[in-house]
Image (cartoon, rainbow, N blue to C red):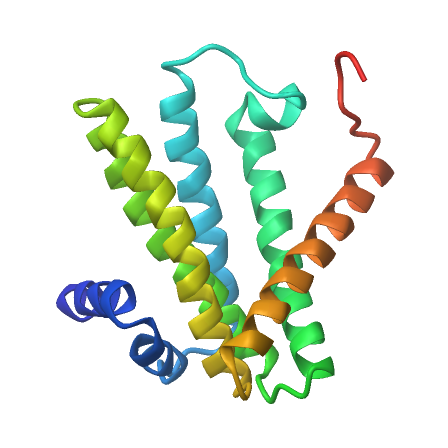
Length: 192
């Protein structure tokens, strides 16, 4: 099983278009994909907490950025909002993807992102500047992978449509998460 996952990870990085079809063909229910997404969020928070212990507090939202629990809530909220926005906006754009399809690609890509950025963060302990450049490059490449996966999941006609879905989905997710944070009483601190 681990060899299959390792190969799928490599395929995702080498050929996102081909890997997207493989991920969508994995016979897991939506409930299992939700669980995978929750595990990715939890692992993300644990790794963030480990790296956070090596640096001074950062950011304008200390309750969110300076502790793993707040980070997990914000990250989980953002991932769920992305799933919903990609599903709804993809449908409005004529996409044929199901909620399960959208959930599968978001869960898988964020798992891949977690693995790659963790490796790059560890590499940064030895080769700081180079690892930072590689991390930036991967972040840009991640959006290309996301576009390929969205195109496959929603059976869109072009990568242009996929790009628009990605942009509008992220805008919608940020607005939704911001609204929920305001409802929860979380506000930026410091000079405005």
